[in-house]
Image (tube, rainbow, N blue to C red; front, side):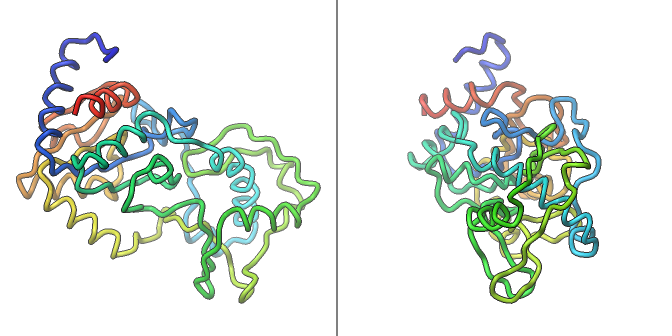
Length: 279
């Protein structure tokens, strides 16, 4: 397996036994996608890498902030949109294909589970590859919007200083000057990535489906999530309340540890492929 710590080896063996029993639901977070070049939100220490994420209220009410967001997001998408599934994503897809998983709920917005071959993934926070109009509700592919933004900003030459887990890039302020935002072609309404911002509510149907999966599983397997925000932690709390065991594989701090029957602090890119090969 490539892991030499005896405790980790024993923990992985236990998790393998649970997976062999079937009835597993995966809850994945940003830590699963770091090996694909997408940064996580907090890192092993649990401290936020970024203190001022875009909120729904700011996006919809502040034209300057919205222009800044789209310039950064347009540049960030050039990297995020090219990301490919890593060994962890492929391992989860293989486990699902073998019947070990009853469902996958992801907090990620990168679509990498599906790109690896997983199906029926509940995208709790949406997907950056889709664009939605806040006026008429029309949905369009991100590639289409990217082409329109390129055409509207032929001189845009921003250079990313860093990339964020939510798909945008850090840019120098002077790079934002003159960036033009485009609107919906159907109604002229405001366009937004089809993702849930801070201050925005997760669609009730997604939440209900996630709770349904959790309440009917044998094991809730949390992958790469610090469970800092309630959006994901609530499913762990529900599992514990229902007497369902919780296993966590995550590098570093996680707020779910007090509720977990098993917590493995080890690289997902090592643990998951081993589990997928062994079971």
